[in-house]
Image (cartoon, rainbow, N blue to C red; front, top):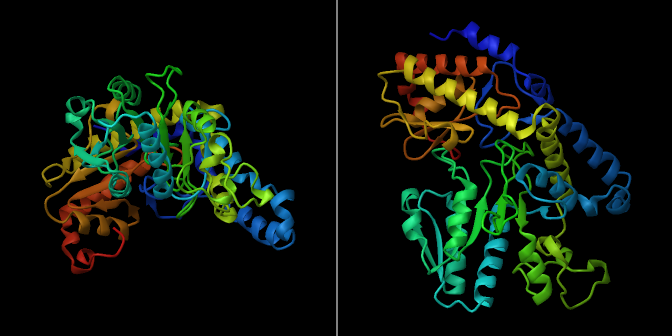
Length: 429
C-alpha cells in the first residue's frame, strides 16, 4: 500500500522539483485547477510593474519601438511555437481563443470554397467539444452555408466522408481529459480530403504537441488555436494564440486571400495608413488589432515558466511526471474513496489521458468540489456531474496528490458536502 512517505520520496527524487519555485503558491492550498487557470509566476508582478511604470509611465508611446511592444505578438508566438511543434514566424499570440478560432476556421472554409468543392459543406466535430468551439463553428456554418455535424469520438472514422470540409477537434477533451492521437487523426482527415483544425487549450504546455508531424502533408495539421491562461500560466483572460500551416499562408499570399478580421496590424504595412487593405505575409495577416501589451507581458512570463523545463527534458519530462501524478491520483481515489459513488470518467490508459483526471458522481458533485475548496484543495466542477482535477507538472507535487485524496475521503465520509453553503451555485463553477 502506498504511503505518504512513499510519495514524499518521489518528490525528493523529482528532477523537475526546482521548477515549482517559479510560482506564487499560497500556503495551505493544493492547487489542482491549472487546466482552468494556471498559477501566477513569481516573475509576473515585477514584469507587469515594469511595463506599467517604466515602459508606459516613462516611455509612453515611444515604448512601441524602444520596448518592442509592436513585436510582442510574434515574439511570444515564436516561444509558443517551440511548445507545439511549429516553426519560427508561424504563430501569433493575440486575441482570445474564440476570436482566433473564428479567424482560422473562416480561412479554412474560404480555402475549401476556393477549391470549388461544392459537395464539401460539413464542419465535423465532437458533441463533447468545448462549447465556444461549437458556437463559433455554428455561427460560421450559418454564414457560409455549411453544416455543423456533431458526433461521438468513436464515430469519427465513419463520419469522415466526401462531404467533410473541416475536422475540428480539441486535442484534450475538457471534461474527460481524453487525448486524440494527433498524427493518426490528422492523417485520417487528410485521407478523407478534409482540413484539420486543432484546439490546443488543454494540451499546450502540458504534453508534447507536434502540429507538423514529420512535415509530411498527411500528418501535418492545417490550423490550430489555443489559450494562454491554462498550462501556459499567462494570467486570467491572457491572450490566446493561432497557428496556420505555411502551405496555407503561402497560398493566401499568392491568391491574396483575406482572413475575415482584416484589422490594421494585419496589413502588410500598417503605418502607411493606406485606406485600402493589403494583407501582411504569412501569419502576420492573422493579427487583427492593437495588441494588449500588459496582458501579453504577463503571458510571456507564463510561457517562460514552461520553457524553463527545456534543460530538464522539456515537455517529454513534463509528460512523464504528469502521467505519474494522474496515475497516482486515480489509484488513490479508487482505493481510499471506494464505495462513495465515484466513477472514473476519463481514460485509464496513459496514452489516452491528458494532464487531468475526472470523476463523475450522481449526487453532490458540485457540493463536494466546494467543500474541497474550503479545505484548500482547489479543483472544479463541470456540469452535470463531473469533479475535475488538473495536474500541472511544473508545480504539482506527489504529496499534493496524496493530501488532496485524503481531503476528498474525509469530505465523503463525513458528509460535510451536504451542508447548505456548499450547495449554493456560484456564477463560475
